[in-house]
Image 1 (cartoon, rainbow, N blue to C red):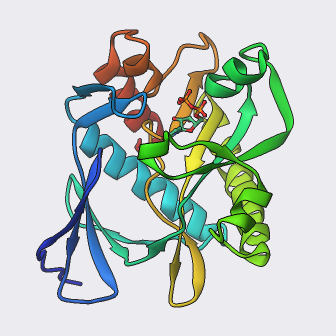
Image 2 (image 1 turned 90 degrees about the vertical axis):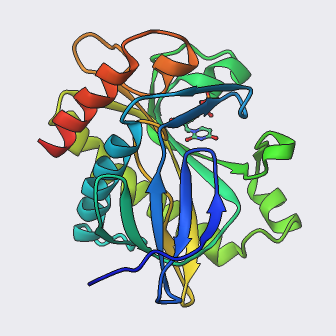
Length: 236
Ligand code: UDP
């Protein structure tokens, strides 16, 4: 299917969205720009866009095969994929299998402790507010999603985790945690955005070293090498 790239609809921190000739389809372009701490830290990770595009493609295909509806249509080239146009639900859904990041900091829990069953958290997607942690009650108060949609999102998030965790385990990676965004397309709730080293924490099973954006957040070095290694293990 030929997709003609039209006007830019939106430019985010890591991606740009473009119109196509089809009102139901958009082109998602992956940039090398990296930000952290609500964009207070900015930088470039060379070839990150290519890695995130290809890794997302592989994971969206895996999820679709496992019965999870996603916005993925096809990968167009190194940095672009064609996706279904969605209205994003402004909730960042985080799934956690191991204590890390803001969870360790907020609650004083020990980084590296296993979490079973997995923990689901909601954050209100609002840069000006710094994406605050919210509960189902806040979702209801702010009318971000109705209770049936919240239930569906939680079910999908757990299903996605159940499909992804073993996939990474087979590749000697621990899926520590990850962030999902869902959108509405023709009345259905589907997975949108990306699944990549920008939005997940992966630890090497043997060394427990970070293979994700934490290398950028914490200035751990060898950032490009880590992204390339994720690409190699995920896409072969
Ligand atoms: N995450 C993300 N975008 C955000 C915040 C978090 O993709 O705006 C991902 C992050 O990469 C990690 C997970 O969500 O895999 C949990 O992040 P956490 O709440 O620990 O926040 P952080 O420590 O990254 O600030």
